[in-house]
Image: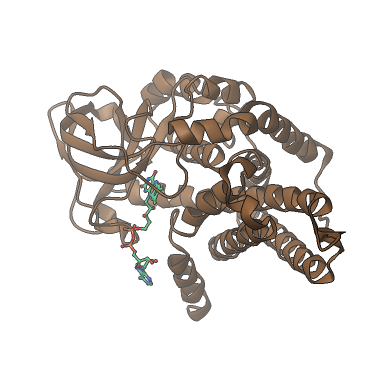
Length: 379
Ligand SMILES: Cc1cc2nc3c(=O)[nH]c(=O)nc-3n(C[C@H](O)[C@H](O)[C@H](O)COP(=O)(O)OP(=O)(O)OC[C@H]3O[C@@H](n4cnc5c(N)ncnc54)[C@H](O)[C@@H]3O)c2cc1C
């Protein structure tokens, strides 16, 4: 058993970390205030090979393992979890396109998706179905040359911002087997967007409803087979959960690093904060939790890469554990900064707000427990 990163993995982490610190961290607060990640960031990210992290090398992607990909998200989140998480969503869509897209669709889209000239959003949730995603109602009716979509998707990260949408829609009867995945490019007649959602965190990425009103796409925009869309959507989620957990991990690490530095500088009662043993113990507890989270997360990623039979359970457990640990750590870091932690300029309160949603999306942490319990009870 080897717990060390290989030289190549360390290089991937270092490259992502240095890009994040140079290009994202100095802008994170301004982008949050503007509610916008400038579109010209993405081709720079694409140049690093991060637009298709686990798209196969034959298709022009980076062909990384899931474990390698977690390193990218951990490192980028040390700069801004909102920007890093947006990249995770684009990568879920890129993988779906590579794995299930028709040759025509791949030829048309993949080069721009990999270079991130074209960014993608993932459209599963609807106003009436979140955790129970297979109850979705958006319909894709067959037309002469393809499909016409009608319905509404809710909470879509990048809604009204992205260049294309991977949409899970009903082509058949009720339940998961009636669902297909279709690609809908921005600008398609009948595609419109709700107002910008005002939210607690992840403020730099726009979240909107995505609405389809007789939105026509050709048959070649169907991914894979009709009726398999829910399976395709779920296939991306094990990896998506690892990525979101990595975003919590990286942000928690950044908050802890900042807190250690702050405690060395800040003085109270004639000593630096780092000299109070009660606070030293608090730091120690945070470090223990962070390291446990990292090892658990990387083990889950390794299991997914190995195709281990219990990989889905481990991804769910790691998502639950690491996102909750991350939230707890950044909140404690805010406390150790005193009143300054509450001020935006110190960057810690943003992390508390950004990380909260990681406990809700890519499957809520209750659903992660459900997956874990089901797996335990079925054996
Ligand atoms: C900022 C943000 C960005 C998002 N981005 C996207 C995106 O890009 N694409 C996309 O498709 N979706 C996106 N989502 C949606 C997200 O995935 C859903 O919000 C999430 O799956 C939960 O669904 P829901 O909000 O409908 O809650 P519900 O499913 O209504 O759940 C409400 C509560 O009940 C609990 N619950 C539900 N069912 C069970 C059960 N069986 N057992 C125990 N507890 C249960 C839940 O855990 C939760 O606590 C985003 C959400 C947010 C907030």
